[in-house]
Image (cartoon, rainbow, N blue to C red; front, side, top):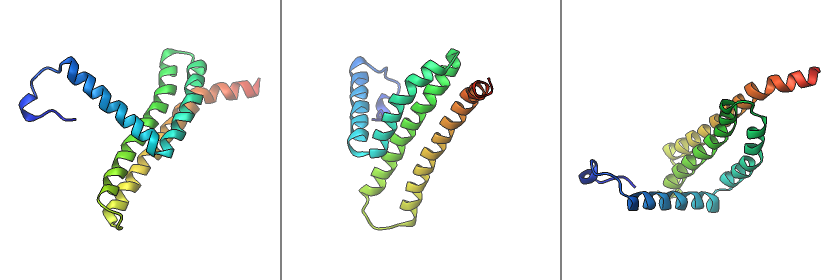
Length: 133
């Protein structure tokens, strides 16, 4: 939740940090409970993150392979938030509502492309060398 204008310069205390953590966990639970796409992406993360940690040779490679997967989860949560806000205002069709949902979906697609790019650039040459040996 955003800080009020009166507390912009106030330091965050431990209780505010705990509350922020609770709200974040509530959001992740909502994504899990209500979004089948998020659940699928979590399952894929569970499979591919250990593979990325194993296949990456350097810390940077490991970080790119795993963080690209995390990026998909982040974008999916944001997309789900957009869809929830649009749906909250009713089920009637509106051009802007459809556009907002399509743009959110496009953002998930672009995050998926980042995963493919990272994995192909890092692991592709190794795979090709293995095939040719």
